[in-house]
Length: 278
Image (cartoon, rainbow, N blue to C red; front, side, top):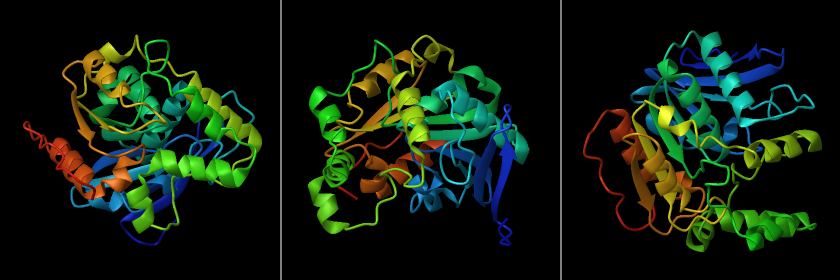
């Protein structure tokens, strides 16, 4: 546990007894930040600070990652959503705003649909409804990520996450390329959980005000999924970031941060993201 009064690193247990590590920073209304597939809480490094003027940010290490337990499985986005509720319960948080990106957006869909009383405002970033209604990545993307050469596979993932111009100005380290400490069974479990996600029938049950965000050049989770989500969730709003790929929340951090803060503050007329990066 941290000795800083505004920071807490702690753990609780899921319903099946799995240890769930979580991190709380800042002071204010709780904002649950959910990371992408096979990543731990470091996914949000350098971004979560943008919300501390108004919110306490809460992150967690999914089961299989970080300091959390790494059971054999099975893993699913529904199970991860149950784990989110366990963390909020341990913190005594009855209601939180929720911001999920990539697989975290899939998890956030279940949190909001199954626990409507626990979610204030919902942001779904670079994510998909899953199932047969979703727009899947093309075969070339799958082949690039499945390369046996780890250096080539990592470079392919970098190219899917960030534009070449941003990479040229940001040599790393990068916090969105996966948890290097994950055992193989957990990595496979996360992949299955993300691939088998299908919340299409549940999306109309989401009552939280919802903002859908996406980079318009995202090929990892194609940008065509954003309008599908926005049309399926009642009264959802959508914004696209021109030229951004999967990790729009880092590449377009100033613009994305302003937009999310305006939405969390209840601003009705959300600004359009300005042109250009940053």
